[in-house]
Image (cartoon, rainbow, N blue to C red; front, side, top):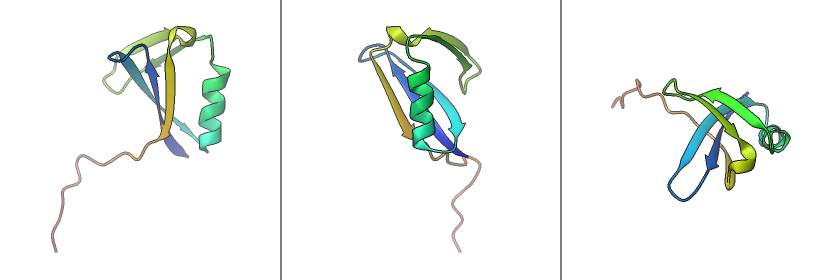
Length: 77
């Protein structure tokens, strides 16, 4: 499974991000297309619950996400 970041832009300053796990970019795109003009609900990484109507979003951006381990420290040999 790969992780993908979906960003819903309402205008130039306001957006909401959502992270999903699926097998491919095509799978992520298909999910976004199937949700078009519907309500979606999710909890973001801060624990905040969101419901939004995708028909009210101006731009949806999908990209593969490579999460970095924040607990990992640079170790020099």
